[in-house]
Every structure is written in structure tokens, then in C-alpha cells.
Length: 366
Length: 251
Image (cartoon, rainbow over all chains, first blue to last red):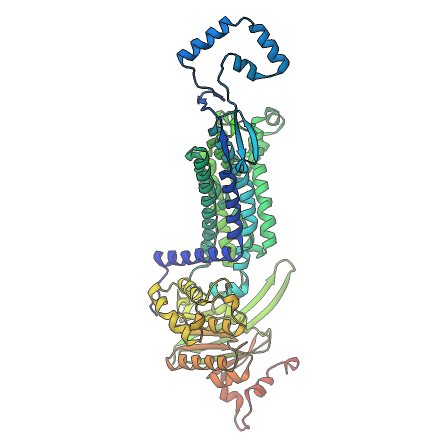
């Protein structure tokens, strides 16, 4: 046989086959279909959206809210004349106060107001609309990216893929693989990349299809939503590396599921706790310098999922729709929010976990 | 002197359980070698240490002390694994592959060039009698068919050393004959075979020399003839001869 040495092309070819193996594993486990079904449901939901009677609102990046467009000179003169000539302006206000009907004044003075509606589930549900269709598109994208994909999606993906590595590393299956010339760390890397690629495919499908459905139905072609594809995959890749370490150490799916969720919670708590520490003067005054050091050390050592989430929320302008959990602007002013450093640090932690897993696997008896 | 393909030098293996603080001596000071072109049998009762020896040979586990060499190199040299074919005793292939795809997958992990794999796979599937099931999922295979596939997988890289761990387990008569033919073919082409088997018949029929391992210790290492027909004694079957080495519970 003309066997090739461990050169780069041979190594990459082996990695590609390990990734193909993982995709087949995902398809055989039913996970592929489950995730496709969730994507289909979300896409149908977006296709079921409709907006009627909205008015394009004026946006000003310096202001926190939206306004109606500036009136034309003719509209302004017309409105001013009507108010000036109105014999009973005080009565109008009184009627408004009693009837609590903003439309009364709007109609009386011919003021342009937003009186549209949003329809859900292909018109089965109707909600009054007080903003324009771009706001609806952003709101739905925020719900899908922030809650469905970044929280529920990541957790479910971690749970569902937790069994991949322990199954792969079962001695009766792994012995033959480990008797191949590919190094053990190569096997681990191939499987890790396979799972991450699978999640990348699913995330791309989910985000692209929902984006397209919203764009077609509402006519809003906002590309910022697509930013959540790399952020979601990055988020998953970081936590799956801990699952890999657990799989190599315990070869137990249960340990991988429980351990990776616990790690995920710990990292969120560490990340939020650290930001809260710097935003709360009482905590800083009450604590010692040692506490501040420990908080900073913990923050920089473990992955920082909240920072990734904040980057995503910032890109999707979440502050326009939801209350602030953290005053990111203040943190930024204090120099305590540096995603350009914290995201690479999270990636470094991921690489560290994978190296630890490789060392452990190299040490394991099969 | 013939070239040593496998060499165990004073090998000792102790499994340690750090949680329960227990130790298990699996192999105790074993020394023997296998030379190029021979079919070598490794026999012994259950838990004798045979599988541990094979695992050390394939770098699946490390010896506690001693040295193991494979194709003239220390076993830490992974590149020599490209010349080794290994058939595991309880083969658990991923059930979601079909036979042909699995062989391509394993070929890639053996770092074989794709054209070579493409050329070898149909021939091997035909050789083991699975060419008409090449695209059938492995989950539909019987145990015997999985064994045949395992054999094809072990032969994929045309190995210089073929390690067969209980290769006839679960095979029908036709399957057993297939294993015998493959071993004979390897021998004829000057390749080395290490055969682990409980079946004295197989070992007697196929092997030139054998090693008997009991409780981790090497009890015998020589030709089969010297074991079955010692000087000035009548010839006996290998099974009978082996009983003299096995503890009474295995007799």
C-alpha cells in the first residue's frame, strides 16, 4: 500500500470524513429532523406575519425613539390654521380627557397617526400597531435571535449533541479508530468540528429562512439580523468544548448534559456578576481589593456568554424594545466592556478546554 | 535471523483505579517476539491478559514497564500503524453508515490516498462476500456480516501485520473458511498475522507458533508441534495440551 504520512492534505481529508461521520450521526439520531422542524415552525410563523396601515416613521440615531416624518410646509400651515381657527380648543381637550380618545384630537386637527395592525398566524390574531413595519421586523428578529436561538436553541443543541462524543468514545467503537495512524487529538478535533459545522448549518438555515420570510412578508431587508449566525455558532462552540472535556473524562452522556448546562449557568453568572459588580458602587465600597481581583480573574478565565449576547442585542437594537438588564453604555465608559478583548479571551478558553480534552484522551486506556 | 515484526520486552501492565485505589496486574513480565511472515497465535483463558497485550501493541494502552516494538519501531511511533490491520473482538461500527461508506471513512483515518481506497473497497467487499450489500445500512447487518465487514476493514490498507482478535466469533462455516483463506493468503504473500482465539482448532490449523498466556504471565512460546507432540510422547490435540497450562477452573 502507498500510505501517506501525516501531512496536511491527509490530515484535512481525515477531518472531513470525521465531520461527515458526525453529520450522519446527527441525521441518524433524528436531531437533524427535529432542528429542521423547529426552523420550519419559525419560518411559518414569520410567513404568517402581516402589517396593515402602518406609516414609515422617522428615525434619528441620536434619539431613543421614533417620530412621525416631518410635515410638509403645506401640511404644517394647514394644521396651524385649523388650530388657530378652532372655536373650541379647550373643549376638545376636555372631550379627550373624558373619552380618553386620542383619535378625537387627531381627527379634528387632521393629525397623522399610526393606526395600523399586525396580524399573526396568517390573520388569525390581530394586534394594534403603534410603530412601523420595520419595528415589527426588528422585534420579531430580536425574539427569534435572542430567545429562540441564542437561549433555547443553544441549550437544546448542547443537550442534543451531548451524546455524540460519549458514543464515539465507547471502547468497542473507538478501539479500531484509535488504532489508526491519525493522532487521538485529530479524532477529537474532527468530531468537534463536525458538531460545530452541524450547528452552523442549522443556525444558518434558521436565521436565513426566518430573515427571508420576514423580508418577503414585511418588505424589510435588514442585514443586521444575519450577524447572529456567527455569534450563535461561537456561543455554541464555546460551551460544546466543555462538553467534549466531560465526554473524554467520563464517557457519559448524562455527565455531559448536566455538566455543560451547569457550566453555561456558571459562566452567565460570572459574566453578569462581574458587570453588576462594576455597576454597583455599594459592592465596590463594601468589598476588598481581593474581591475585585477575584471577580476580574474569574471573568477573564471562563468564557463570557453574556458579552456575546450583549453584542448581539446591541446589533439588533434590543434597547428600543426591552428594558436594559445592564447599563452597557456606562460599562463602556468605565472601560469595563471590551467585546474586542472578551470574545477572543472566550475563544482562548475554548482552545484551552480542547487542549485539556486532548491531553486527557491521550492518557486514556482503551 | 528473521526480522522481528512484534517485540515485547519484559512488559508489565498494571491497571490502576484512582477512585477505588485498586490495582489489577494484567500482564506480568512478558517477553516474546513475532517474526516476519509467520502466523502467530495468542491463546489463554479469559482475563489472561491477551487483549491487554494487543492493546499495548496498538498503542491503545501504555505498558507500565517494559518495551513494545511494532515493525521495528517503538509503539509510540504512530506512523507504523499505517501498516497494521486490526479486527476487534466485539466490533461496534457506527450503525448509520453503509458498508462502502464505512470503508471510505476508515480509509481516510488510515491516511490512505483516496484513489487507493476507491480501488480497494469494491475488491474487499467482494472478497468478504458483501458486494451486493455495499449500500445497505450496517444496522440491518447480522453479526456474521458485521464480522465480515470488520475483516474487510482490517485488510483495507494491505497490512504488513494483521491483528485478528477472535475473528471467527459469530461466523458460520463459510465465514470461518473465509478467515482461514485470508490468513493463508497473508502468509503466502509474506505478511505477518497475529491471531487471538479461544478456538484451539483455529489456532492449530492456522498458526506456526503460539504463546500461551495465563494470569498475565507467559507460560509457553514456541511451535505448535512442540506443544502437541513433546519429545518421546504421543501426539495430542492442542486443546488437551493447553489444559496443562490453564488453571483447573478453566479445564
